[in-house]
Image (cartoon, rainbow, N blue to C red; front, side, top):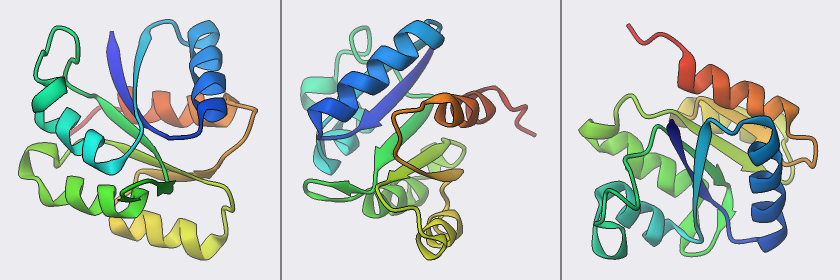
Length: 136
């Protein structure tokens, strides 16, 4: 089972993503954190997230661009600076997917940058592409 770290503070977005993935992708485990600091702690297996049986290593990060304690771009930059996360796929979600923002995300190292939506088909397609692509 693959593990996704979902970095999102909006309870409605959390609910709908978990519901969509629960019905369409039961082979994916979703762990949610609310801010950049918790995302970093989870990825580093520190503090509350030190129990790897409860908080397994992450196969993919899906992060909102606008999150407390920083931004999805700041989290992405931190992830890309950590050698142990060099191959960790990251998908950023934004409320306004302007081409300039998408280009910035991809240039910064995101695998994909998508507009938030209640239709999770595109996100699920990108998640599967990120998780199940053969790495060389």
